[in-house]
Image 1 (cartoon, helix red, strand yellow):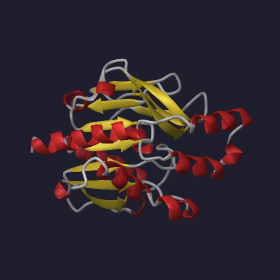
Image 2 (image 1 turned 90 degrees about the horizontal axis):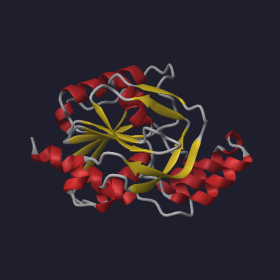
Image 3 (image 1 turned 120 degrees about the horizontal axis):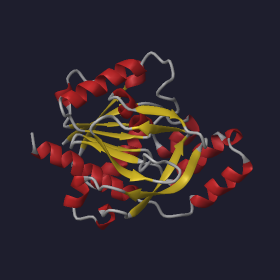
Image 4 (image 1 turned 30 degrees about the vertical axis):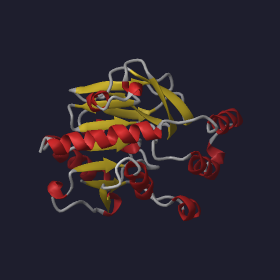
Amino acid sequence: MKIGILLIDSVQPALAATHGQYSDMFARLLGGVDPSLQFACWDVRRGEFPDSIDDCDGYLMTGGRHSVYDELEWIAPLESYVVRLAEASRPLFAVCFGHQLVARALGGRTELAEQGWTLGVHSTRIESPFPWAVAGGDNVAGTHAKLRLIHSHRDQVTRLPDGARLVGSSDSCPVSMYRIGKHVMSCQGHPEFSPEYARGLYESRRGLFGDDLWNQTLASLAEDTDGGVIARWAVEFFRGAADND
């Protein structure tokens, strides 16, 4: 099974030397569940897209530092590509910026959050589990179960597209996860982030945060996270789509 990574941003050189690029992080995350997975990567900021949406069995859109409403020349073509994928029911797993852009491209809304930054480890309550997660027998997929992910954002999805279903929410991020049918899986948190990478990222942006938020954020990174759970769900998501082809 081949997964196409739609890359939105680059890791800072000082951090990339240790942690790799975002495409490497996702390949490690999903490959840890299924080592047979193959990956290809396109940097959409450079106008790179697959020749055909059939080049891969499914797609993954990463996070990034930009806002989906920034006036950048590559955002509109990416939104159009998301619409093409949705019209073809091609599976798409979207994270952070991807989570926000997919919602916007398909008729929802993403805005600057009133409370500002959401950083560090936060708990998400499952409101309506992903069907493929339940099928996989994962106890964390049950309604009202909670899982913890690292977050790094100040934009949020504030309105879901028509036909989308809320999967997870939290006090800090009401639309933390959603799905559209069986072809879109989306989450705001970062399953691919390690605590070490997150700390380095936060330190590089230290001037943006007040002391209270900074201290709370660093303390939260000592908590366990459930990135591996999201990885299992994502692999089940892609497998299910492949089985239906």
